[in-house]
Image 1 (cartoon, rainbow, N blue to C red):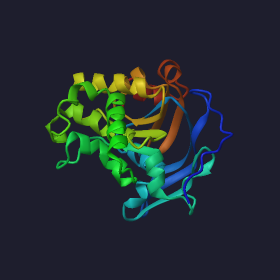
Image 2: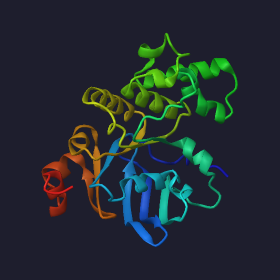
Image 3: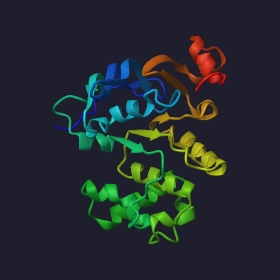
Image 4: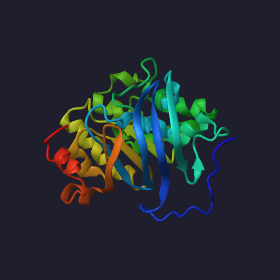
Length: 266
């Protein structure tokens, strides 16, 4: 059974809840990483998840498309709902789920033996797209959305690994967009990039959030302040505070949030 998209879900930009997390706990074996987290993620907005290393940020977003369960000894309790449907329902197909909730990882990971074109087309072919005109159209569209088309249109047959680090990360974003996800998860997408490439990715994310729901893990406090509409602050696996980024960075409600933002720890 695939995930249904309810026709009655409100679509007011930046206000409706697309992902609803309720009492989420997750971990490995006897180790609990996430402790009873409840938070909503609005559509067509960028939500940043920040916190010090080891606080559970990456585990959190990996729970959102069920990648966490691929790790031996992992476990999850609570619920994550997409438009009201529990993603951990026994009838939900994880492969279909990961098409709707795409993921971009910390380090650019283009397929090393694939061309630029085939890197973007890989997900399409996996999802049954065979007709070359349709694949070509979707590849170009995705590269344009990732602000990469003009830089690679004359060398689509070159290896994806021939691109610079920043270009490779945009290629991975294009690959994720090609299967037309509704939500895009990004796990510290700029941590391996130089400042110029980071600026380019941030500009891209600002454009993409007009059309997609974005959830981004970042260790960079300034980056969250620059690009996020909302921010979630985790500490030791617990949700300390969440809300509009502008409010959290100017008038945080919790002293621990203020200490982290000001650089006193983390």
